[in-house]
Length: 158
Image (tube, rainbow, N blue to C red):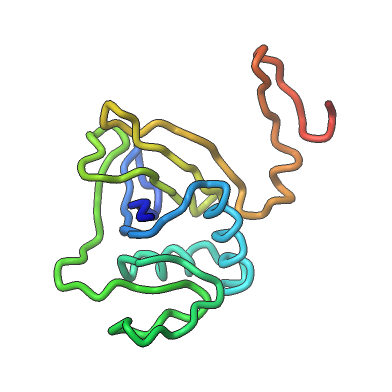
């Protein structure tokens, strides 16, 4: 099933630059995959990963993409299956603007923080912050969280 998703880089005051992933995934699947791509393919170089992701629109991302005979373009090793399209362009937008189109997720890299923030499209056509993740999962272990009662807790302390 197609889950149209945008992936890109956060910019100043809620603006972003992004590309389409036609067969994107929910955060439970895509966040660990992006962490693995960041580590295995780009040696934890967030800038290089962002540049590679913004070079194409994508059918899907994969750490070990295999050539498929129906693809007109070979896969990008360590990254996935690019879309070959004349009209594929970098998308520039802002979180406060209408989502526009049949999109479900937006993943934005924050280069200076080595962090990934995930937004979901609402039924009202707006982006709603879903979650934030350090690309290095060890850093998540020291990040506070909130429970349903508004109490701050640290993972492993409950």
